[in-house]
Length: 242
Ligand SMILES: NC(=O)c1ccc[n+]([C@@H]2O[C@H](COP(=O)([O-])OP(=O)(O)OC[C@H]3O[C@@H](n4cnc5c(N)ncnc54)[C@H](OP(=O)(O)O)[C@@H]3O)[C@@H](O)[C@H]2O)c1
Image 1: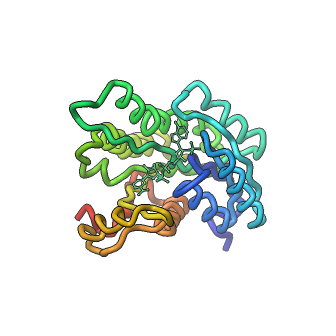
Image 2: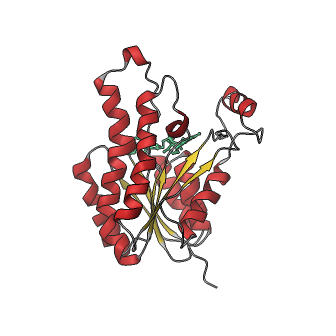
Image 3: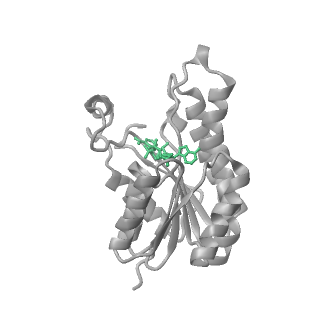
C-alpha cells in the first residue's frame, strides 16, 4: 500500500527551525516533498531544504512575513508554479509573547493575534483552492495555553484558543474536500532549551516528561493521514491538561 504521505506536497510554515523544521524533515522521511517556509531564518531554512533533498525528496524555501496578509497569495502561487499542487498545509509558525496584563499594549496584542491567528486564517484561505483540487488537509498548531489560559500570556492564549475554533469552523467550511485538524502541544523541549523548562512541566504532567519533536511529528503525521478525522484538536501534552 502507498504510504499516505508518499509523493505528497506539503508546506510547513516556520520550518527553518525547531518544531516546524522537525515536522518538515519528518514528512520528508515519510516520502513527502516539502516547501520550507521561513521569515527571517534564511540560513536554517536552506539547511532544512538540503536535509529534505538528502532524503531524496524535492524541496524549496519560500520567505514571507505571514503577518502581511497581502503577501500570502504569492506564497501559494509560488508553491503552484514549483510543484503544481499542494496536499498538506501545516501552520506551525507563531510567536510566543509574554505580556503582563497591566502593561500589555495594543501593539503587543496585534503582534500576537496577527501572526498566531489572522495569518493562519489567511494562509488557509490562500491555500484552499490548491487543497480543494488535491482533496488535501490542513494541520494547525494550537497550544494547551489556548485551553487552560496562561497568566502573563493573555493575547497568546487567546490566539491559540482562536486556532481551536478556527479549526472547527474551517473543517465545516472546507468539507468535504479538505480536512482541517489541529494539535495542541504542551511543553516540547529541544536540545539547548533551559533545563527548568522541562523540570517545571515534569512536575505537573502525569507522564512525567516534556514532549519531544518526535511526539509532534507523530501527531501531525497521524492527522495528515487520518482520512475520516476532521475538526479535531489532538492534545499532545503528556496528560498535562487532565
Ligand atoms: N515549543 C513548544 O513547547 C510549544 C508548545 C505549545 C505550542 N507550540 C506551537 O508549536 C508551533 C511551533 O513552535 P516552536 O517552539 O517551534 O516555535 P518558534 O520557534 O517560536 O517559532 C517558529 C517559527 O515561526 C516563525 N514566525 C514567527 N512569526 C512569524 C511571522 N510573522 N511570519 C512568518 N513566520 C513567523 C519564525 O520563523 P523565522 O525564524 O524564519 O523568523 C519561527 O522560526 C507554534 O505554533 C507554537 O505556538 C509550541
